[in-house]
Structure formats: C-alpha cells, structure tokens
Length: 242
Image (cartoon, rainbow, N blue to C red; front, side, top):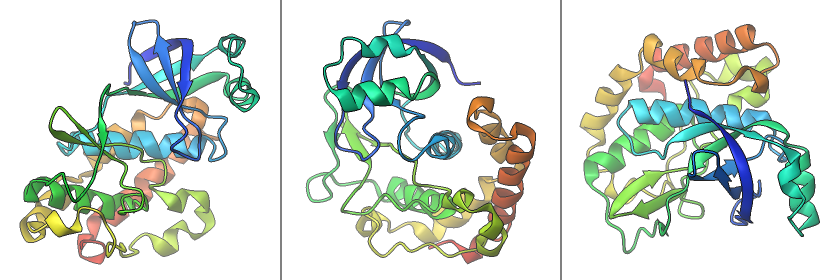
C-alpha cells in the first residue's frame, strides 16, 4: 500500500497546472506536491494518478514516490490566497502526494536528449493508459539529477469519466503524433511487445488495489470495473501499440 502521511504545513501553490497543486510539508519531514481531491477534476484524477503512476513504476519507468496525504483544513489559516483557502477546505481528508524533486527542470526536447529505450517504453506506456498530457505543449516530464521523471497522470484513463461508454472504447488506438518523446522513441518495435507482455492481470491488480477507498463510489465494484477494462485493453495490444 502507499505510505500514509499527514500534511502539516502548506508551503506554496504550483500554478503551472489547472488543478492548482501545492507544495506541502508532511509529518515525516518530507516535502510533497499535493494533488487536491477538491480540485475541479475531482477524485477521478487522483485515481488515475495512482493507477497509472504505480503501473509505470512496476514497468520500471521513473516516477516520483506517491503517498496518501491526510489534510486538515486548519492548514489554510495562514494562506492569504482565498482561492487556495477554499481549495484546501474542500479537500479535507485523503489527498495524493508526490515526492517533491527540488531543483528539477521542466523537460525540453531540444536540450534534453532521451535514451531511445526509455523514450520508447514511456510512449508505449502512455499508449496503454491513453495519456493525453505528454505532448510538446504539456510534456509532464522533469529532468532531475540528469534523469528523466514521469509526472502528472491525472489525465490518463479518461474512459472512467463515462462508464456507460467505456466498453466501446476499450481497444481505442492511441493518438501519438504529437507525443513529446516520439523523436527519441526509435526502439518501439522491441519495446512495445516487451512492455505489453508485462501488463498481466496480476500487475494491473497491484496498481488498482492501491487506490484509497475514499476516492471511489463503490470500492469493490469500481475496482472490478477498472480491472475488467484494463485487462481487456492489455489483452489486445495490437489495437493500441504505436
């Protein structure tokens, strides 16, 4: 299970994203980027963050540690920004934390070359989870200590925003024409089948089980719905492989 912490101090907002995540300190003395359950995207974005982020980790892709972070609205008292105050108050309870990487740089495809194997595996992973947020306009990649890190997977798994249509799009192909890593992903022929073969039901179950019950309407039924959809998608990789 994900480590569970308590956010003890709100440090500063990160205004790069539409969900207005913030940097917080926690009771383990660590610093985390907090994704709020009360943000506009709602808990489903946090569900996608956990399932996709932990799948990526199990596929040996570099993802900062994810934690469950309990938030008491009292931490909003010292925050002068009314928008942030309201967001914190609306997010009381269980939120998602991502390890803060101090000094990390935003990925620039012009100045940060990427190993072809890593680029290919990341692109194939994004194809499976249907990541709409890895374009050159919004890479959601960081460079830290010379290495590439994948972040922000809240826009993946977008089938779960309309479960009534999910079965119709389970084998939907991935649009990868503007994927930011496409120029470096020259090992797709090998990386695609290798990564697809690792998407076993057991691996999918591991990631789905990490989602906190508090973010699900019906934990047992919802987990089964994710399991059914993702297992069916993994079973036919030829439909979504780049």
